[in-house]
Image (tube, rainbow, N blue to C red):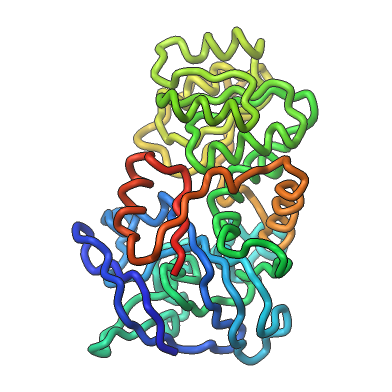
Length: 363
């Protein structure tokens, strides 16, 4: 299958949009024509050597599109179905069997290497016949087409604007899931969200949808704090404040829940200090350095929880988010700015700088 894809060939140079040839779809896979795909901060990771991702690579892991063909053994989707593509999982480990695919034992190899875990498949060929990794989060959707394991596909109604739905497969799912799944926020709760990018703002919207009566959004950027207030935050605070914990305590009297999306240890420790004695703090992403917490805070009953993909089962959770959106309770579309795939480098710059909350590439 011929496709156009944004290929990352160097950790320091721009993407190259070029012709590639895709394999498959093989057993348990589907070929999808991409309608739109989000650019997530996680898509910046291949530019670092932290994960050892081999280049060249087609990135992209927040895709949505139309099924064009299926491999053998596929019964969950049919040709013509509209689908959102989410993360990959094995389906057979303890976590997957318990309905927790985000903590799949093979999550890293299936999502963060760019290669098929079996060592074959997930490979595109460039115009010279060279291999290009095409299994980033099981999809590599920075392209006009991609081959995806059926476990990653979530069918959605054809009446919806398909090109906007891809970010529900990762960023928005992660933020909303942190609130609704991981922390179990209930009516009347107080919730603090640190960092108001795509994940944090999804957490803010989900907290209000869950009935939280106090939602505190923390960010260093005034424009982001203003947006958080428009989307449901009842209070906003400057994240650079040296008295952040004290300010949260003044507002909440001790927060029920906190979600950190910054990865900054000083912010995280402030969040933990601001919890009441049975409060919980969810950490999204990787922390930037050692995290040192007063053991007395934990001994008193507070909990700290690492969160991956919002602890979501995408096939159940994405339809839930769509329902909230249709009822006006999760207006994620307000955060999206469209870019042609050919302008992926501009989209990357805008995401990295914070100029845009969620860039969506249209092939």
